[in-house]
Structure formats: C-alpha cells, structure tokens
Image 1 (cartoon, one colour):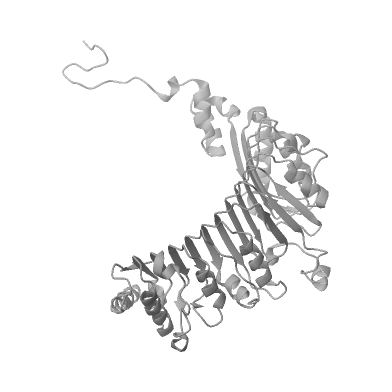
Image 2 (cartoon, helix red, strand yellow):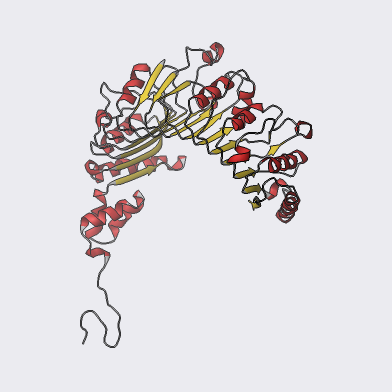
Length: 465
C-alpha cells in the first residue's frame, strides 16, 4: 500500500505532475518563447494543444533562401489568418519587399496592433512605397522599435510614442526637417537612441531632446549611405547637404560616434561619462575640426575610446587647445595600426597631459617609438604617469624594435604602475605554425621582463590569443 506519494520501503516521492497540468495562459507563455515555426509545431502534440499557439504573444519571421521566397510569402499570409494578431506583443519581420509591397503592407497593418510592445522590421529592396498603420505612431504600449530600410520614412500628421524607450533607425531617409523634428519630439520617454547610416541630406537641422535619454549611438559611413552624384560634385562639406543635429540630454551618460563626419552633431548640457569617438580620416571632411568639437563637448567624460584616425586628424590642427579632462579615468586608443608615441601623434601626448587622473591606458593595435624621439617623448611628463596611472594594456605587438622601445620607455616613465599587460596574437609571429608563434610570444615576454621598471610594484603579464 502506498501513502503520501511515497513508495513502500523507499523514501522517494512519486510525482504525477506534467506540463499538461499547467493552465492555458502559462502554456501560451511557454510556446511564445519558442521560435515561431516551432511554436506552430506544438499543435500536433495533442487535441488540447492544437489551437494554443494561435494566441502566442511573439512572432519572428525571417525570409530564407531566394528559392524559398514563395513558400515564405504563403506561410506569412497563412499565419496572418490563423493567429490572433490582436494580442501580439512582440513582432519581428526580416524580408525583401521587391514587387510585393501591397502584400507586405497587409502584413504590417495586421500584425502591428495597438498593444504591440516590441517591433523589429528589416526590409530590403523596396521598390514601391510601404504603408505603416497610423496606429503605430501613436502606440501607447510600444517600448522598443527597430526599423532598418533603405527608403524614405513617411510619417503621419501625429507622432506620439508615449512609452518608447529604445529606438534604432538604420539606413532610413528622413524626408525633411519637419518630419525629423516631429519624430524625435514624439518620443518623450526615450532612453536609448541609435542612428545607423541614416540619410539626413533633406534635413537642415533637428533637435533631439528627451529628459530620460541616457545613450546615443551614431554611425554614418559614406559607402553605406545613399547620396546622389550631384552631392559629390557640390562636396559633402557643403551646408546644403549637411544636417545640424542638436542633442540635448540632461541625463545622457553614453555617447558613441563612428563614421565619416557626414553631418554636424552638437551636445548641449552634456553629462556624458562614457564616450567613443571614431572619426574616419577622409579627405573631404575637416576631420580634425570634427574630432576636436566632440572632445570639447565631453568635459565630464570618465571613460573615452578614440581611434587612431581621430588622433592623427587632431595632430593636423595643432592650433586647437584640447580641454582638460579632470574626470577621465580610462582611455582606450583603438588604433588599427601601431601608433607612434611622438612623431605625427603629438596630440596624443597633449591628451595624456590633459588627463591628470588617468588610471588605465589601453593601446588596441600596438604602439611604437623611434629612438631618435626618446628625449622628446615625455617632456614634460604627463602628471598621471607619476600619480594615478596604474594599468597599461598593449594589444597586437609583433616584436618590432620600435614597439619594444616604446614599451621600455613606458615602463621607465610610469612610476606608480601596478600592471603592464601585453596581449599577443600567435599568428603575428608565424601565420602557418601556431607552435612557433606561441614560442616567439614567450621569448618576447621574457625579453620584456628584463626591462628596468620605474615602479617596483609593477607586474608584467602576457596574454595569448
């Protein structure tokens, strides 16, 4: 005889619970967490499960191979009829539009309901205008919106995303200044904004303001942006195609700019503490002016990442006086190539001298110094080298004489250094033999250990990759 769910003579509990004992609402949450096709396949499990998937809260659709397009189109249209779109909370669609704009418009108008919370659209090869439902732009529940399409974004007369916190726009073309302003004014709760290769040539000026805005990411690469041939004849520096973007964020903490300087950005009331400035060094943009303006707008920055191109551009504008970065504790130099500590990169030294509280200095892409510049390199010595600089990291060294000399000088200059971390890639020493590459890395490490150190507490570490 069995009592209290225990087997006679054993202390084991026999459980009769199964997933089928859960209420429908819980099962639908579980099904909603599955990829859409797998969610639909649960309908074959039993009679009870046959229709559960129809009330899922999340649908993700991604077009596959070109030869499967017709099958994909039929699947989505069938899904539109079968599922309950009115309760959908998360919807994602990635596909080519081509000549099927009317069909895609039907999908958008049906799947995007007034209760949608997260929306992600990646639409390619748009040949005819797309129509977004007006209810989208006044949706009171939408919190996350990602839109990627190489096409003009036409907006209705009213835009009000009351709860939108995250907005990512990629490759879109804003039709005019009024529309752009209407869009950004309609996002009072915005916290995170990304603008990726958006074409603003029809926008003269726009103000981005949100009291809750905390992060902005901007990327604009000329090769990925749609411009007319006439624009290049006029010149991309011309005010006729450069947009002035005013960013007012009293709570903005993170700012990233990666690109070719296609438009002009201005930060007002900046409270940014984490910034990344990667201005490509291109002939048609005054890259030095562009970079200097950004740095001048970041007086409170605590962590800064800056590219070698940006530093090189600054070095050609020596008439500028860089601001003092009293709060800067971490400086990442994303170089892409070995950077010279002196010749051609004088502004790097100025940046170090203007960062009296720097604790961490990272060289992403090696560093070098010609022995002929040894007497000039730290004259005067940046204050942080003798007071606060505790960690130096150098990545991608190959063992060249100028690289090793730069490391030797840094060790002699940094009097309070706790750690020097050298990161090596074995293939930098031998492309074909990992064993040889690792052996040479180890030999290099032993050679660096022999260098005299100004700081007796400094440890030298080698990381393989």
